[in-house]
Image 1: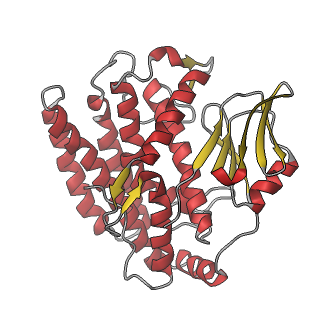
Image 2: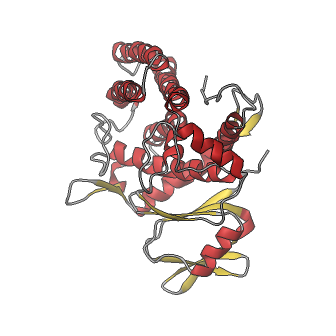
Length: 343
């Protein structure tokens, strides 16, 4: 099993990333603030506007260190990659399946079913742990609807029908997501999912952590030789990481949504860390972004028993495990893709 390494997050907006031999060096106003050997990290996410040196980009490409650039609000801007790795036969198989509507539909059903099942588990967990502090009727009704949507998803006849069921299940899930916020309710109100830009503190958190998750999934797919741009559920568009978006679906509730709830309910973040922009969107300040990233890194170190592999793995390696399983499925080593479902 691959070793879990750290991702280096650069949140200072005026930071410049450069190379010194085999070290990644961060400078602010031309003064060195931090350095780390490249072999100690597996990814870099820069939220600064100063950029990175060509030499550093070359080093990351050579060492297969994922280098991504995102805005301070978490919007993905770009990525530096080296030569594509992996077996070309695997990618050709991926492309052939992506062009076959029936095969795409079957795989897409699994992604959506995994997302709905894991969303349902988040709600059930809240009922189990906090039944005295939540609206049981609302959550039980949402769980019932998600169970019904799960059956519809597995019987969907085409992609448009499937996407409709996925949208309806997301609407149901997020309509009660605010019920899971037990503390700081007035400061973290949520009335459904919104983005581009996020209009409340909860949605700002969700969007930011989804961006972090996207970085992990995209890097995992590339590491096993799959093309993250060619997916089965999300429509192909120039620059869109369709397969990464597909695989993110099964992870959103377990990795991202639960972390958002923990950060709020444990009061690790407060409303003072959020800034409303003139256009109405919400951004996090630098201190809050750092707090979220620290919690994300700690979350990745936790271990679970993988439901299919039946091995104890760090949560941070789940995207890599699923990318490996997807590659095995595409090579016909597995009869079906074993989507990740948290019990």
